[in-house]
Length: 209
Length: 207
Image 1 (cartoon, rainbow over the protein chains, first blue to last red):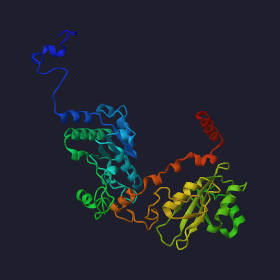
Image 2 (cartoon, rainbow over the protein chains, first blue to last red):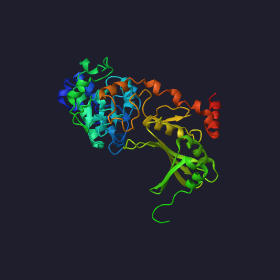
Image 3 (cartoon, rainbow over the protein chains, first blue to last red):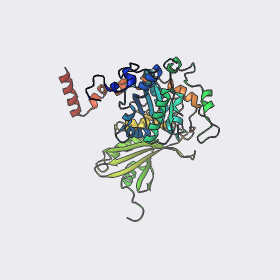
Image 4 (cartoon, rainbow over the protein chains, first blue to last red):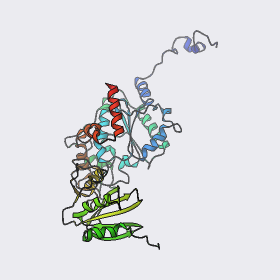
């Protein structure tokens, strides 16, 4: 093919020549298109509170390069963010703050809980620490580790992308904001107990009790 | 000097001057510790700061200790340093738990004591008389479970996890992270002269 062929690369393909497809338009499902664009430009809102945030920085820096997955713009503004990454333990004092940040993020939005402390409270089974951020904001992907290596976080992000690619734009239930019930909680104690065994130093105490 | 470190010569001077108000003293891991009477602690600390022979001009830390033995009193600890003489002194005050946990604030002597005393109040419940702004500093303002570093405080807090989450979420965010608290205008008069000049010059430029 000559480089200046006015028919473009399609000029070589008999099927294209017959007009079934053209390099200028494609057919796809709307879900695939929307999910493809969403999954590949996730802007993270880094909520770094502890050592996991150091690993997050390593992930975002050149060696591991978060930008390879469309996340080069780390938004330190919730208004321009898609993924809340809670990197580190969350004390009760910060609980209303992370909830405010989450509420300020526009839909569609997702959340990654990075590390043992964000996911379960980790070793901090004490008076000051939230025992898992999922009691305050809905979490899509939990990345285990103390702290997780950058590969771990990247794997979590790839899992999130996979999850996003299975969503449907016609399912409004995915975008419903989870609000506090009358008791002021986002997840009722029974729901917390259902997913958690007694843990920590105590074999009697669950995450809600 | 043999194996044990010598006692800081400040201690005999303290005894000579304040007599019975100065209690026992000890050398612990090379550091001299001296116990003083709660009622005269402020006077003694003032002397330690101002006496030309002592000049403990830098307050390193204020903290408190509660021992597992319930009979033992709670201790308030002042770690002093003389920058000029490169000398350290640890002053302790015994506070029997039966009585009121109160001592005089030393913010008027070392303004750095402000947040340190707030932390001791927050964590141990020791009140500092004369402190200009004795609020909680680590826990939030309407934290209602008491003082977490006391021995009678349960490790996981007094309420269930879900109740703790509920209380934390209901804490008024704007009330506790107010802009007033971060406002440099309030601190203007206390700022160093060069910072004041710089701020004034910038205000002039922006006009």
